[in-house]
Image 1 (tube, rainbow, N blue to C red):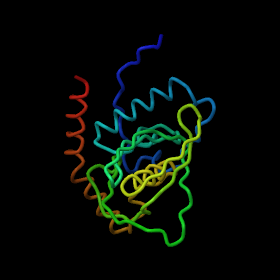
Image 2 (cartoon, rainbow, N blue to C red):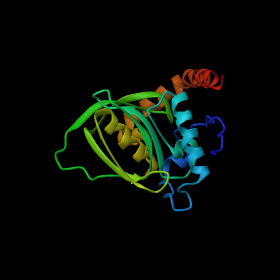
Image 3 (spheres, helix red, strand yellow):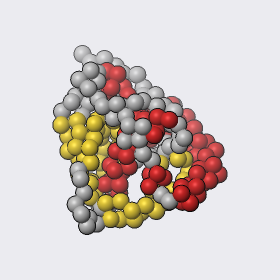
Image 4 (tube, rainbow, N blue to C red):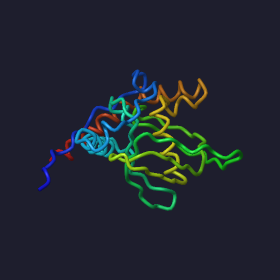
Length: 194
């Protein structure tokens, strides 16, 4: 008989400027794989991501030092991809690869978004919560998501890829829109709690 799990908890999302977002996260180990603690974290991260209306969420975005991200993201063909990966590594990109410039935002930079060029196709290799190998291939928007979340675990935000001027503009957008974004998240969290 399986144990009944508690309802997932919506966690606080860390914001630009917090130290945990600017350092490489701890590699998951045998101690983590298959643990109830890890399963619970994954459930909580999915709930948090959905309340925040995101398509991906890295563990350091909920103040956990672990190389883990979850995703629920469509690709450019409308195919929905849902899952998680620990210890992700993005395959090296071929020289002359196709880039797509699309709008990108981040739950840790609330309310801000801008155009950013990223490779059109990405392959991420890692393991699942039981330590079994996974290979995730994404194109278009899903490729962007995989790259964005792996960047988080390496201590980077998408705004770090921008010029100083554009980064300053994104931080101003966040300051101007933050309150509204958090009110929307609170409304979705209240609906989920019912």
